[in-house]
Length: 445
Image (cartoon, rainbow, N blue to C red):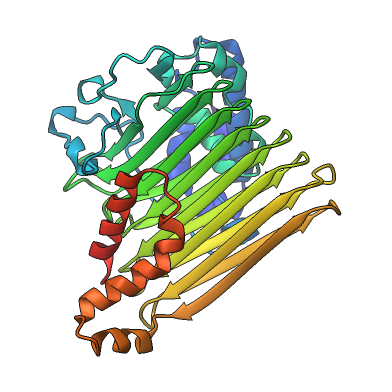
C-alpha cells in the first residue's frame, strides 16, 4: 500500500488534479474482495489497476478526451460503496407505455430481485455478476475485449467494479420478449458507482435488450463508470437500446464493447434525452468474422448546460461485412454534443460495405457541437462513405408552418421530428420508438 501511495505522488498531472477521488480508489483497492474467489480474476484485477495507476484519469490533453473534461467530476470525494434503502426506490420512473418485457432492476448496479420480473425462460440465464464467476461464459469472455482498448477507465472498472449483471442466452434460444434493464441511481450522499455487465448470445440465439437510466428523486450527485461487454456468436442476433433519461444530478461514463462472430447481427440504438448533466459513451464494435452486420443509431437531444459525448468505433477485421451508422444531435440552450466516429477497414477486410453519417441541428445561439467522423481504409475492394452536416434551426420552415395555422410549439416539434425521423424510423421496437419520440417532443425547450 505504501508503494502505491509513493507512486501516486510521482504520477502525472492527470492524477494530481483528481487527487481526492484517486486517493480514495488507491485506498480502496487493497481492501476490495471483489474477485477473491478466482485467482485468474484476481490477476486480471491487479493488472488492470496497475495500468490505471500508471495512466491516471484522462485529461483534455489526450486527443480522445479533447472535448471531455473530467476535472469537475473526479476532483472531489465520493462514497464508493453506497448502501441504499431499496424500499424507497421507484423503478416505475423507467416505465415504457405498452411495453411487455422481462424486467431487471439494478440500483447503483446492485441486482434487486424484488423489483425484477423474470418469467420462466428456459435458456435465459440472468445473475448478479458477483454470483456468476463460475459460469463458463464469464470465465471465457470476462475482460477479454474491453480491456484491450486504450480506455483507461475500463481498467479502473475491471479493478474495482462492485456490481452488475450477467446475461447468457443459450444456443438456438429466441427470448420470447424484450429484457428491460432499469438502472436506478439513488443515494443521499454523493457517490461513485462502478458497474460491470457481460452479455453472451450463443449461436443462433436472439435477444432484445432495453436499458433505461433513471435517477431517484432528490438523490445526491452521482458518477457512474459502467462497462458492458457483449459477445454475439455465430448467426446470433441482438437488438440493444440505451435510453438515457436520468436527472441532472447524475453523470455517466459508459464503455460498450461488442465482439461479433460469423453471420451475426448487432443493432444499437443510443438515445440521450434532457437530464443527465454529463454523458460520455464509447461504443466499440469488432467485426471479427465474415458476413457480419452491425447498425449503430443515435439520437441526442440536450438542453440547459448538459454535455453528451459519443465516441464510436466500427472495426471491420474480416471480409464481406456491413456496417451502418447514423447519429443525430440536437443541442439546445447552452448544451454541448460531441460525436467522434471511427470506421476501420483492415487489410484483410475486402468487400466491406460501411456507411457513417452525422447530422446536427443547433437550437439557440449558445448550443455547441463538436463532430469528427473518421474513416481509415487499408483494403482496396470496399464500398465506404461518411459525412457530416451542421445547421441552425430552420426559421423559414417554422414560419411556413405557422403561416398555415400550426402553432409555434407544434411546428417546432414537427420540424425536429422530421429531422430525427431518419433514425427513429429504424427502431425495431414500436413501443420504444413511440416512447422516444414523445420524450423528444417533451424535451424541446
